[in-house]
Image 1: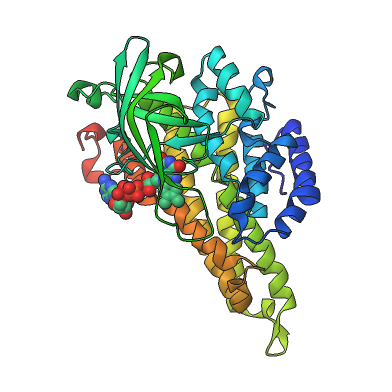
Image 2: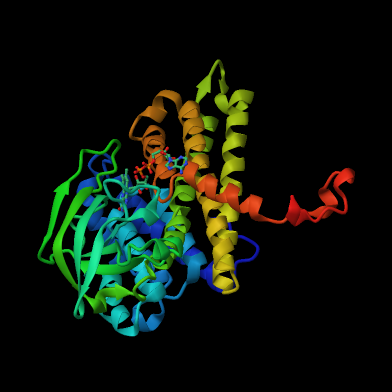
Length: 410
Ligand SMILES: Cc1cc2nc3c(=O)[nH]c(=O)nc-3n(C[C@H](O)[C@H](O)[C@H](O)COP(=O)(O)OP(=O)(O)OC[C@H]3O[C@@H](n4cnc5c(N)ncnc54)[C@H](O)[C@@H]3O)c2cc1C
């Protein structure tokens, strides 16, 4: 793994530890897996990883709650190395994204009751944002929670929930105040960790997904589901804050795509040097070299920016609104890069790239998913573009005829 100049000694030690674990234990396991059957072993691998002390969420959590405190850089190192194995570890990923808000905002009791069992691999969590009529417009959640004494009663639907039928907890976003004033200030939502076995929850499997990404995707119906107030994360009206902060952890989790990109670059490199056509290794041909260069450039930029963001969070000095914008930029760039890298790898490997031995086509198919989930790239671009136009123009960059005009008047 390439060490970056700003990594601390702790980061470097952790990178060595993770790389050793992945090379000696995880990659040999990954090599034995038929990737079309990977869905059957995703639980087994997730539990194995947790037992070995490498739950990604544990990297962020304090030791007193069962974590390892390796920070966002450690979390990213781990995700990158997991991506390099191209393993199906959905139970771990959804638990990170669903359990992340408990780590960020949970009370000490909630951390003890919910987070610690997640980190031990005893409990798994799914994340419930999407609904039949709510996709990218995530603040438009319709699932309603009405207060009744020290409980809330939930009614409505969620859709596309990965592992919805298997998780122990559903990290669920609901409306608690539908008034226009609350909507305007984004205080209309609240977040609950709902035990899946609660009476009134029914779950159906959604249509089969494309690709070898068996995620036990589900539609969930909530009918008079009673949830104790103690399961609310932060306070009533804080659901948007909880959701968007959790999404930042999710977007940094795209490190896995950087790991997959690295795997593809490494595969294409060894393949290109070995494969001979027209009497020479194909690595000697400029068409192959420019594709390799494109792959290397995309990987380098995606990886460096990702770790710069992780370091910013670790420093504790990140402006969280700006971080949201930067995390969106990183998510867009890394996921688009993975698609382009996978396509280049597929062309370099050609026929072999379309086999399960080399996985380029398989990774390409699954990479398409990363473009539309976790905030679709097109919609995230709207957010980034709007923020750019909100910045005050630099007066020195105005045409001479406009010098002296207040930039705020433009
Ligand atoms: C395999 C899989 C697993 C998933 N797992 C989960 C999960 O665990 N939990 C969960 O909550 N969700 C999950 N999802 C849902 C996923 O997050 C949503 O699919 C995603 O948010 C996009 O929503 P949508 O599909 O409804 O698309 P839509 O939001 O309906 O978008 C459709 C199109 O319209 C465009 N569009 C939308 N709004 C605008 C706008 N304002 N301006 C311009 N263009 C716009 C979009 O860019 C897109 O091209 C999963 C989805 C899949 C496929």
